[in-house]
Amino acid sequence: MHAEKTAQGIETGAGTLAPETLRTLYRHMLAARMLDGEAIALQRQGVFPAYVSLHGQEAAQVGSAAALDPEHDFAFPTYRELAVAVTMGVDLVGYLASHRALWHGGLYDPIASRFSCLNAVVGGPVPHAVGWALGERLRGGPGCAIAYFGDGASSEGDVHEAMNFAGVFGSPVVFFCQNNQWALSVPNSAQVAGGSIAARGAGYGMPGVTVDGQDVVAVFEATRAALERARAGGGPTVIEALTYRVNPHSTSDDAGRYRDPAEELRWRERDPLLLMRRALERDKHANADFFTDVEDRVRAECVRVRDEVSVLPPPDGSDMFAHVYREPTEELRRQHRVWRDEVEQ
Ligand SMILES: Cc1ncc(C[n+]2csc(CCOP(=O)(O)OP(=O)(O)O)c2C)c(N)n1
Ligand SMILES: [Mg+2]
Image (cartoon, rainbow, N blue to C red):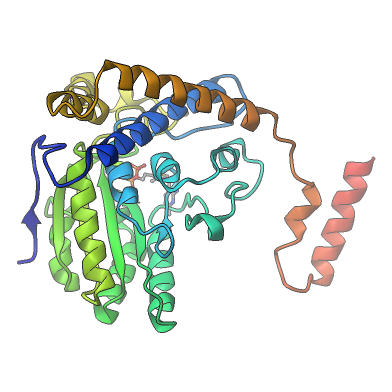
């Protein structure tokens, strides 16, 4: 009943956004693409134990994050939201430190960034977002939460419970599903009964919107509309951005074992950066000098982030005992002593 289609196709750039804003969206997408490449290289060099690439999902992430109110809203990411972090201005050295496994969820400040800790529990960020949004509503604040999750996460109980809860209480949340067609090696056809995550909104009493996840402007507009609705007291919305994970699930995965390379090639033709670049050129919002300049600047920034994250010192190992309980138990103190004795030997 609620499910509706919005902006399909590549009308990118044809909306109401100012040329400057369109160029900024492109710059964020490029920064995420280039940093993603650096992160894969760092994994290959042994600096990161593992990394999960967002290649192909830049428009879905940048478009949704750019629609947020950076002062009041709060994002709850999974493990794949590098382009959301880029768009929200999160400290990227601290963000990528998560992938060096230096600390639980990185070394950036989640409260100041309005970007929660990376969450590797599939579906895990979704109830957190609803809890935060309920708290925000109770204290009378204007903020909205955005919950990121994947097509695979949509079959987790956590996601059902969170969406139902938000529907019942009218919480200011945007449930942002990046349907990248695969949950590791499991395709949509074996994961999403009924074929649509957006359509599930009807069962939770909220609108469901399907959007072209390769079109950054369409994603931006859909997210902005959902946030406006939530802020005005209209309750939650589920957005399903149709996109594609071009790379394997992670650097530990071999996608050749379970999917047809021709499918990857078809999606590469709908590369979100390529589509945006064509639209900017078509509408004369950017010329060759812009693209050269932005590439140079972004590359320099990526090199800085790569070099800094590579040499970050490990934190004090005894920190791992610090935040378990407010008052450490006798047993925890004992474990701490044993650990210290072993380290000092
Ligand atoms: C609760 C839980 N179950 C299983 C896993 C293992 N796992 C990690 S990623 C993943 C697939 C998730 O797919 P999707 O939600 O579509 O997100 P994507 O990786 O495609 O971005 C699985 C099953 C996990 N991390 N957490
Ligand atoms: Mg997926």
